[in-house]
Image 1 (cartoon, rainbow, N blue to C red):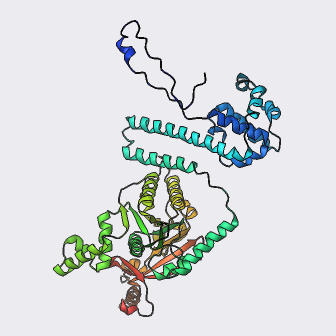
Image 2 (cartoon, rainbow, N blue to C red):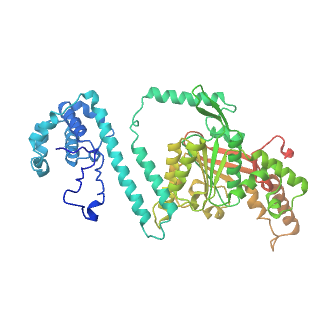
Length: 515
């Protein structure tokens, strides 16, 4: 009698006719459960493929030999695929040549078994349905294996394998398994691609400022980039004290403050402006980032807030502003040394719960790769690929801050170049946009000229005056250099920077005195 794969093996009850059974015999034996499978569906599909080779095209885009529960069925499917790839016919006769020396096929009947499979065929119309059944059961077996691995790893006594690392790894593996279960990938018609491109153009046309992506709140940057586009990895790099975090914080606030949604007739939400922001701060605490936003909005220096030197009026102003900012859709994760897997799993969670629209990472050199390696260049490459993958998975822009190498300091012109990106060329390769923050005033402030031994007082005074004039001119100026843009032009944007309030703004070149 055949035993169903969906039912446990029967357990025989102990014979009680000769008195009470021993205590051990009274215990309930554990039920045996075989992994999910459907051999009849596998036979039906293989029979269809042998009877009509055209059916192979309907299933070959997602079905692989290892998806079959019966290894012999998987080998037969592989042989069918190889014959068809070689332009030959795949039927019981041609397939037998593959298995003449194969004892495993002989054990199940050889050519007779192939003929039996051919007799199990179903309509070609149903071939994909049967393949999907096989594939779904394969995923369930993978889930069972995954669960066992998670349990065994949790029991592991390894000290350096922390619980949070295991959770992050498990979430990533589970997500990867879910992605392999997506059967709707592959090619799409150019007509569909054209429609999607027109939809993006229409969104940009209807928005104020003609932005297709998330606006930064800075007019000249948005004009050059068209906003921060979904699926793009945008690098914002600079030397320390150039204002990377300040600019990222400004962009986060502007995007969150502009966030608007509309609800369609079916009750679905659609973002029409701004974005929900996920800010991963690996350097600063969440409180420090919030203090920067408060300082920018209230024009109260953040160092006065830290030292407690606020007047009563300033404190009241701070409290009033804080109350108005409480509902900003900004979520800050200040966990240090995040791995790529953990960051991606938390971003996916935020996407599902709060419709995440922009990810900011400060900064990528403080992240860790998933695999342990002493090669930092390879690790940074893994991190940038992971961030680019995240941008495509969630269809949101990812703005990642990056440090630059000290090579900048050795040049007379301190403006950064692509070659200054620290530790890995993969940062430039994987990114869609590479931008640099540069403030010449920073170097001028530290480069006040001193009188040379052979220099007259008049010559020194003249040189010092030139330095002072240039320092005054550059005092509140900053540059954002777009060194790479995959979908648009490169160039430079002049910005206004107020270091006291860590604030960037558009530079009014016509009325600079107003600042």
